[in-house]
Amino acid sequence: MPNRILKGRSAEEAAAGFLKKKGYRIIQKNYRTKLGEIDIIAKDKDTFCFIEVKSRHSDKFGSPKESITADKQNRIAKSSLIFLKANKLFDEKSRFDVVALSYPEGKPKIELIKDAFDLGSHFIY
Image (tube, rainbow, N blue to C red; front, side, top):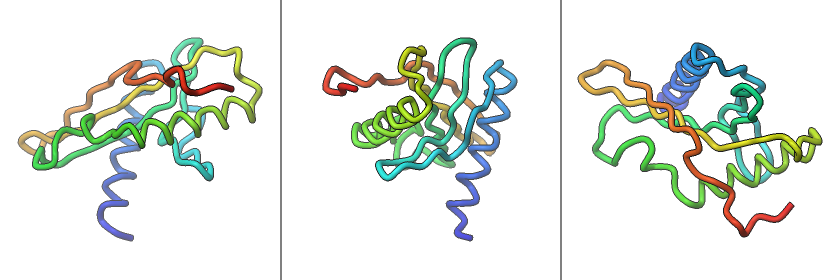
């Protein structure tokens, strides 16, 4: 298995543990659709959270949160709509969070960004 996949899985496990400590209830990991993937789907109190996990071991290519492009946001948003529709959850509150992991001086730093982005007005369901 390539090293980047192992690092990604490790970051997702660290993020899930971090979220659980923050009171999130993990619903599903690595939710895949034909339109994209959502790293973690969880509930924070009464809100469904679609969570992108990004990690960087250096800032050579920017911070983890800077790497979530508009295209990536659109794929996550479309996948979240598929999840909501499949589970008849359109009346539930939902949002998009990001867990950013960085490793300054080799030590992990985890940052939770709630409401990191939104669907925008061009999504109709």
